[in-house]
Length: 230
Image (cartoon, rainbow, N blue to C red; front, side):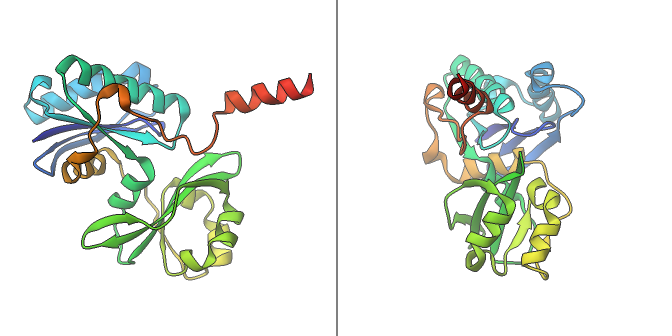
């Protein structure tokens, strides 16, 4: 099966083509442009590079969050439109799960950390089992120091991956001096497609995609603060 996958949860994001569980094309986006400016042109470029037509795509995959609220909505809406037009289903995948799946390392445990800004991280622990990634804890949004203090036992021996781990390297090192912290953040679209290929049972109708926000959007928080102040 041919799967087209899209990640717009970061500024650059990425797009990939996966055929029968193997990534045949993957490309990060141009971070100097917004997702709205690049899409759907990036997806058409992926089709041309892979030598396929969009009508040949049998399944779509999309990063469902957590991540940039605006980017998340743009990515989901784009995939929903393509899936509706082609009468296809979509596999929504957690960004943290994709990050853990894309992580290269030897530890059986992966701490996936995404920079949530405002001093916080979106974080989740994963266990590698037989080549797959199984969640060991629910995704949370919290200040990096609190994540490290509250989950000390679970984090012990884990490798840290993601832009959140890079940003809060010093805090991690203070709690776990021997922790392995990956220096690079891989594009996630390929991992999204591979996960979708392994779990076609997760596929839903386009309108049934539920974004994973973990925390409330900034706009809602600001609105409530204004209401409280009034």
